[in-house]
Length: 406
Image (spheres, rainbow, N blue to C red):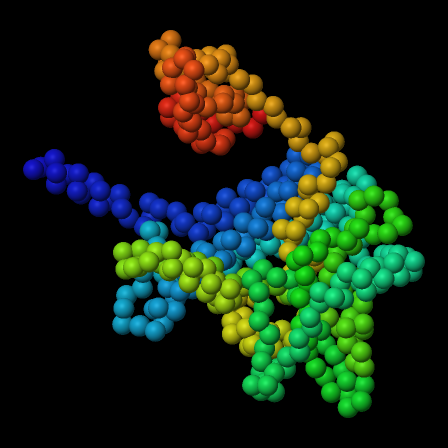
């Protein structure tokens, strides 16, 4: 009995907030290490581009799931203030976690964009991969892209107008903005009555984000949104294009499913996935030079707070850099790693049990690769598949160990 009491006291002493790290802030520190991989000069150039892109896509998922969960807890507490707030293992309330996340994310995003503009982009140019701005192009190249705009872009663009909140009316609802889509907020002026209007143009995902520049060396690109921005007059005849600003939103994509209460789990999953399209906006990324009136209009019409807005100084949606990282410039990428068969597993006809009978052995992934499915015995029988897993995970059965990066 005394030993039980001591164990309980020890457990209570251990389960204290000061003994735990915050899950969300710890994840952000992990993602910071991903960015550091991209900033490491020892890493091949296109691999650095890849890690920079992964940092952005990781952050997208973080807001869609983890920040969404915290905001839901904040909303629940605000609706029922008599209920005690749910604390994280390290003792933080949801509002405190949300504020800490913002303080951690802002400098990380700023650091990423400074690194991309000041270091990564010039390094790509020096290696023969140019990411140009539209203003850097010659008149002949701009004309070629305009013709390309007429053929490929114009048919898939659907500009939608909207008005500020104080001028909103049911006949002109705010357009639906899809999750993770890149958009242009366009300021228009009517040539007749000189009234100012707003419009939203979605950058289509069905086309490559980076457009190959005609009459230029290979691997020379310009961002798709800049091609659209400099040809907006073709979309809005009779209107003056005063300016446009890119923005991007991240919606709540967390699935809230009570499995024990669901009569038909598949139907509930379908309904949950359908609701994801219209999830609450968790984050608004907007160009840092966006005028206050446009910024305020987007905040009000998206029903978010200033704390949900992140100013981006430079190219937006850097996760799309994965297309650049996958360019077939092999000297700028990690060499492909070819694993070798373990000597004890080279004979596909030999039973795996016979291999074990000769003694336990170790395989490491990705140094060693697993053979084709083993048969139960050395006789000709129908092969019995074995459960093999990808690298960085242990299978246990074969004593497979993860290996460090070669």
